[in-house]
Every structure is written in C-alpha cells, then in structure tokens.
Image (cartoon, rainbow, N blue to C red):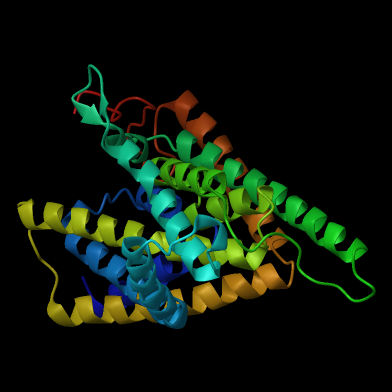
Length: 325
C-alpha cells in the first residue's frame, strides 16, 4: 500500500465514520466495484478506526473531561447515600444514559441457534454478499430515518416557538430517559449489523423522534460511539494479529492513515454539527436515497444477469452468505 492509498482511505474513513452516510455501506460499495475485499489490510483498517477515535475524543475533550469528573463525584455520592435519581444534573444524566445505551450491545454476542454464529456475525454475512441489496435497502432506510428525524425536530422547534414572546430556539428535551437511551442503543446495534444503515444518522434520528434537542442528540450519538469504535478496533485488532497476513503495512503508511482519518474525522464532526444547526440535512437525505435507489437497480440487474456489473465476476445474493460459519 502506498502513501497515496493511505491518504485516500483515511479521507474516506474520516468522512463516512461520522457523516450520516454509513462507512460500512461505502466500504461494501467500494469493494463491490473494485472486486477487492481488503482482508489483507485488516490491521490498517484498525488503525483508521483509531484515527477516527482520536478525532471524536479531541472534539469532545471538554465534555468528556466533565463527564469523567462527574462520574467519580457520582460514585462518591452513591456510596455515601447522597445520590438521587430525580436530582441528576445534565452530566450525570448523560453518564447514566450512556451506560444504559451501551447495554443493547450485548445482543451482539447472543448465539444464533443452529448456525454456530453469534448475532454480531450477521454483519459479515450481510457485507460478504456479492449482491448489494441489503446495503441498498439500508441506505434507503437511513434516508427515511433522517427525513423523519428532521420532521420531528421541526415539530419540536415549532412547539417551543409558540411558547416564546419572540425569536426562535431549538426545541426538544436536553436530557434522556431510560427508554430514549435503550432505543438509541438498539438502533446502534442495527446499524452495526446492516451495512448502509448509518450509525450516526439513525441514532440521531431516534433521539429526534423521542423529542430530544437535535444538538444534544448528536452529542449523545458521538459520545456513545466512542466505546463502540474502541470495541471494533480491539476486535479487528485481534483478528489482524491472528490472521496469516499479520501486519503487512509499513509504519509511515500507517501513520499517514491515522493522521488523515483523525483530521478529516474532526472536520466531519464539525461539518455534521453545522449541517444540523443550519437545517441542511436534506443533503444527506437526498444523497442516501439516490445512492440506495441506484444500488437497488444495480442489484436487480446483477440478480438477473448473475454477474457483477463492474468486475464481470459471478454474483449471487446467497453465494457468499454462509449462515454456518
């Protein structure tokens, strides 16, 4: 792999990890078009995840530091009997709801009867299909969720505007309930399994549907993503170490990939927050809808012809979807 390749992949990872367009979906599309699965660069992919992890930690370092300090204060109050659920401040509410929001991730490790697989393995099953129908439908679902979320946010703002003397303000609650956190966590699990379903976009939309302020919902989404990105990096890292190829990328190439994905990831977070604040989410709604619709057409043609339109290789919806892994 060259430095140029590292730059390109770093840019793609940084953009798609945080913008609501699905990094897994775009990876599946890229591999489908090029015919390259990319298993040999598994360790490099892990390092790109590390770069995006650095981006979100740096962007939210002030909030993360407040949460760390408040966490230890909360632990102290719990042991001294001073903790009261009804009197939690914003930081404490966020800490508790982040923990609750992560609980659905344990679903990923539930065995699927008769398959020898766990739920998390479905992600590999769907992404390994030579026909991108699942990715296409998931991108369309992302578009629908973003549209519904934007609609709900407008309704929240309109309700708040009616109670004001003048001017305008972003509507919605700033704190989460248990139901809010669990639903967002379940959507994060769905996004992890379905290539094309954007994690940031779908979890943001669920928050907006539940009546959460859109900026607070996005902050919750990105902070919740930190342990998810870290877990993905660790799991892929273990696979990379165990794989026959091992670490087959030069250190300078890895360094460039990390730096580029971190810088682009940081800018992507800033850009996403700006699009959200400016009510310009229509760009992502239209983009995911168009790409999803195009992939549906491509998938139908490939199903009829039995070949990959881009590589000419044989293609079947179930040919590589092995449920007995």
